[in-house]
Image (cartoon, rainbow over all chains, first blue to last red; front, side, top):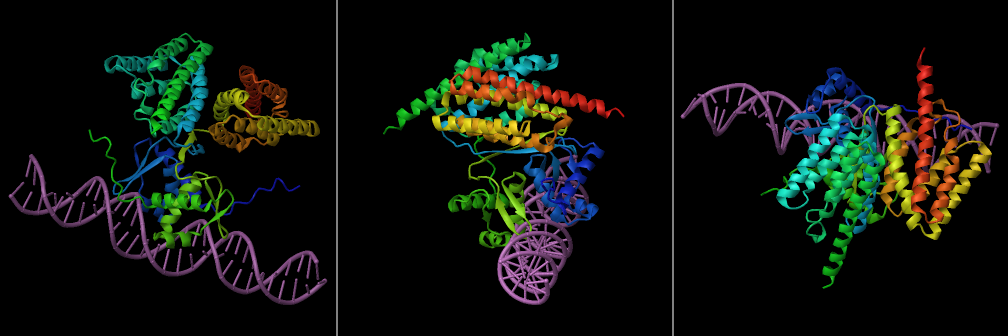
Length: 243
Length: 243
DNA sequence: AGTGGTTCAATGGTCCAACCAATTTCTGCA
DNA sequence: TGCAGAAATTGGTTGGACCATTGAACCACT
């Protein structure tokens, strides 16, 4: 009966501070990299304790919106607007083979969808950017005779960015970080990622040809090769574990 | 050459506090809902100021790991382990139609993949659980003559859980929360979600028949109906905005 | 027994004033 | 002019105080 009686909100000091600060950033048109007022000044201007200001800034820091450098100041790290939406994502993934496969499954889902969306929505500039990254990657592949995870990653990032949905890039970035937790020379497979190489260009071709379904299929193939590599690596690991 | 020499950490007080606290939670096997030590006790035990403890807890609160209730205490809100990965997702200008569509695109990608995986991996128990949720949902649909977002959500959750990959549920849960920010009577569409109803059972049928591709296709259809509803709602909104 | 009011200790929220540590800026000497 | 050292700036930490809310215990009244 009283379902529609939400708990009343009496105090929200630090929240109010953040709202005020967001408004300030908007009004001053501050962008990433720029410095915002010192904690002491904020405390004075907003008529709150410096402690409260710090709690508010700690929140923003946790959200990656801001970076605090002792002795220097507090700097914006990303664009911030008063009506932003935050979804804290905490992943409990483990550092084992199963955990890696889990991230790959997410990657398969998102990569396929992003490639498809990209084939529909990418503009000319984005298309050119993707091709540039692709060329860089292929060049690195030739000169170093193997996959370069750095250039490879940038190619995929370009696709995510061109998908028109910022969430893709952010979520995949989390997966990528989990991957890299112990992906220096992953599992002892020497030519890791080799098999995935040709699919990069075929994905791009589908995107350029505005063929979403084709892009999706090629993306799935690419992930499948990575999965195979991983499974091979896990088998190796198992063998070398028998001592 | 010296790439692998990370900067030494002279100060990382609050981070250390969080690590200690995570260890404590692990050791005491504390779960969601349970109360953790008071700030004063933590400060005393860890030999740091109470302010430092507060900054650390503020971080966790921002990540949604913990809830603080004045006069009562600090309570765990989610499972927490020392090796978690935190990735705050931020959606600029999130409270609008574009933001919702963004989450829907993520949902489409994950829902399709999860349904396919589920068709491959779900055991008998999981299958039964999914069907139970489906029955509940259909019953709610009959009695209340409309979609019940609660039962609907539980049905999808059951699928994610049976996919064998915990990341699906975690990521989608974040999307879901954003969805519900203003999804009470979303956008004034009266029979929101009505069209998606039949696809729930068809998805289940494909899963039970161990047909991953079929499950994927049906899941995509379901999301498509939700997308249509959303677009209708946006159109309504636009009309009613003209004053 | 139950209803409502009061008291009181526990707990998170805020404030203050000071000091520490890293950084930046200024200054004065060579 | 160049540069080393002093001084100012700024975030990080501390300890102590007080406020606001909560929840349990207690009490009076019905």
